Length: 214
Image (cartoon, rainbow, N blue to C red; front, side):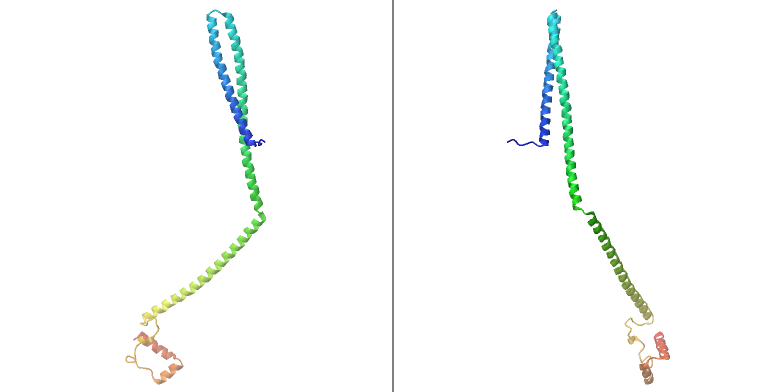
């Protein structure tokens, strides 16, 4: 049982047959042209010999041979035209096959893609992205506030340190290096008792005077 050929195999076989026919036609035409040259030489020879009857016979043969050559050339031209058409049809078939494969792929992609689902996905993405940006902005504002407070506190401590340095007191805040009792009189018991209740304005002024004039 013979296997049925597909369209591509049939086209390939037809192209081979046409090529073979073209080669056969070309060989026949070349053979006729050689016979033409032989008859022409014989006609010239018979004419030189004065044999008009023989020259006429050769001439008739030459006429028939040229008619045969014209027919072969016409057939060869048609075969060539059919061969070109076959190649064009084969190219069109390949193009149609490529388009069919592309259409199939496009159909498969369209079947897998749901426009409504895609739109919902894009909306959800935009929503989550906006929420992320808002969260990031709030975090940045919070961090900036914290950093600003710490920077203000650091700046305040720096100013206080400069003031204390100017009056000869270390940042530790301890008054151990303040003028001692040997250089300044110690406060009286009444003053100490008063200090325990809270310094008066006079006490504060006295302490500032001592700090400024050690």
